[in-house]
Length: 367
Image 1 (cartoon, rainbow, N blue to C red):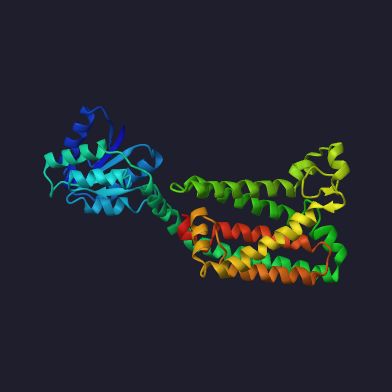
Image 2 (spheres, helix red, strand yellow):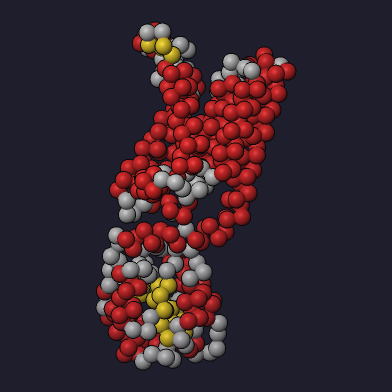
């Protein structure tokens, strides 16, 4: 096992002796200093070790100062570092079994050398138990990045939703003033709105797949998140007819005959005079959206069974601002008076679903 070890001047002697013990046990040990008992600053050496560990996540780290407190405080400021201050073998073992610690912090002045050797040995021999502990780790493994991007994220959500609403408002005005421009430029195939929808769907798909990968404790939650990931991916493919127009691929006779646009996609199929697009992506999807945005949020705090379903399936729920956005977009699209108003709702709908899956109301339950 690759092990990085570092200390300040107070832990210099203990560090050297632990280094020798680790080498005798067959570990690959890298000494990151300090190199003498001359007074130095423990944050410098703790930082060096944590940076090395971030580059080699399969390795482990050993930090030593007078009490172990200082180096543990520094180490735990780094994302992906889980440093445990251990003054007993039992605590060291639990820090691995329950917390999957990857750095152990020891006190040279408060614990004897023999005790520190025993504590280190217990820590190295212990293994992470996973299961329910994995779910708890997931809740704070994201703290590092969230601390950096929290302000950016909240403003990104507001920026995207405001921009999306302004785009729909602009589209509504253009549709009323110059419908030809609305049809031929703003809502044209492979235009800005269509490609924006594709990007939002792919982004929502990535978020869903990532959530499925992070959910450690719920098999049902994994399945639901994976299903949403594939659903959004399918929607992105359908939006651009699976790249057919971009690659100049001619449709087969089957799609030429029953697809209203003669393209290779399912949502434009016409069967026995019934347009799948209007039936499924119009009426059925409209009903689902009303249930999801208006009925479920109202019912969620009144029906315990629904709250339990949402919890077990890890279903992201819309915030009030998402619901307001949905209502405003629906009203604006109707005011456009255009037969192509669906392009506006499609653009805004894909955006809002990306926002909901990225920043759900029940976010703390989905981490």
